[in-house]
Image (cartoon, rainbow, N blue to C red; front, side, top):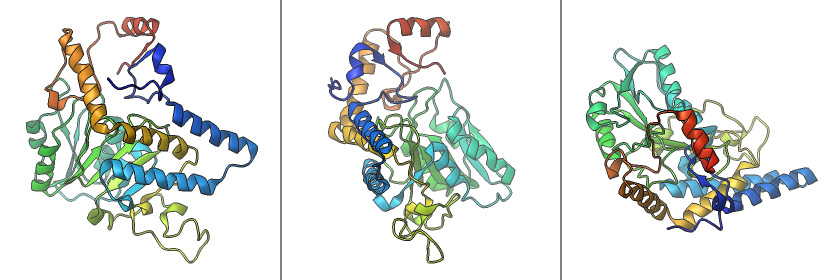
Length: 336
């Protein structure tokens, strides 16, 4: 069992089962954020330092996904990642389509849904009791599929899609493979080889605070991308040249950057440090052991082990009564 006591002192007197909504605050992140706020109150907050911490955060997230730091952009949450990618598509030609699961989370559904207004057909992948099979994806993908967009881990069910199958489908169809990794990064190992774009929010399994998102785009694809909300961070020398006309767009993923929310990196870097020190493999193994223990106790766990994530989704009879009972026992969870 992993010892989380030094990082999460408040975990000792409660059971926290709500990371899929928001991570439990950890001590290092809380302390770093508190120090930043105190500096703000004292009038000594240094935005240059905050930007440097932000670049440290960029390096750590890039390392986590196995990407070069030049390939990672800061976006406004997961929806900002999906919207940035969706905006790059040309107006749809006859038969052009985008594939997305029927019950994918809104951040990875609405941006693709809106492409219908630009001539794309939205093709929905139907699940079977929360499971998204290879056949379900294959039945709607064809040679005119522009994008296969899916959450790697479905937040509604905890189901982990078969990434190998999706990579093959996308390659055969000549489509982009775009992943929402908000419920995957920090909880399971993620392989970006063969993935065109991947994005995630920072306040779930990455143990950060709400307000930041991260976007990886394959370099060959990124070169043709145009920023949808370019700001001062999108240029080649943002901390040196503040005014026009001597400006040029960055050649790295930073051209897609939104402005860094200066408080967030102080906390989010600390969350990434915890993950690096512990190891994603150890975290994944730990969570799998917890689920296996529940299974040994007679609780029915859905899906094969390869398709299980740390999100355990079960059906409730009286949801309100169940949640009230959990609260009485100091157990924090969510109803979807």
